[in-house]
Length: 209
Image 1 (cartoon, helix red, strand yellow):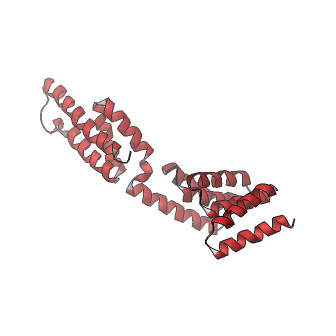
Image 2: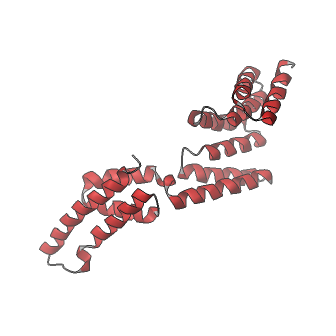
Image 3: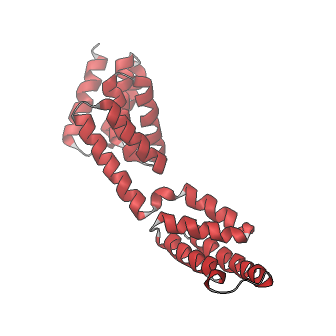
C-alpha cells in the first residue's frame, strides 16, 4: 500500500502519456508538449514513492488519469495517505506542538482547532486525538473527551494516558464503574511511577466515595 500510489502514478503516466502523445501527433502537434505528461507523471511517481512533495505527487497522479485504470486508484491512495508526506508530517507536528502551547495557556478553542487540522491531515494521529481529548476534558466536554480517548485506545490499546484521562472523564461524569475500570487498566499498563501513583489516588477516591 505504501508504494502502490507511486507505482500506479508512474505506470499510469507512462501509458497515458504515450496515448496522449499519439493523440497530439495525430492532431499535428509536436514539440516539448508531447513529453510533458510523461515528465510530470515520472516526477510525481518518484515523489509519491519517496513520500515527499505532495503537490508534485498529486500532479503526477492527475497526469496518470490519461490511463484511468491506474490514475483513479493512484489519486485515491494519495488523498488517503496525504498525512504520510514529509511536509505534511512536519506541519502536523507543528500543529500538535502549537496545540499544546495553547492548551497550557488556557486557549482551549485554539488548541482544539489545531488538533482538528492535524486530524484532518491524518485521521490516525493518536497525539492529536489525545491532545484534543485532554483539552475537551479541561473544557468540561466529557463526552467529546471520552470519544477522543476511545479513538486513541482503538489505535493504540496500550496507551496508558488515554485510559487514565478517559477514567477521569468518566469520573467527572459520575460513571464511577467505568472510571474504575479505566484507572485499573492504566495502573496495570503503566511503567511510570508518577503516573501509576496518580491513577491509584484517583481510583482510591472512587472506592472511598
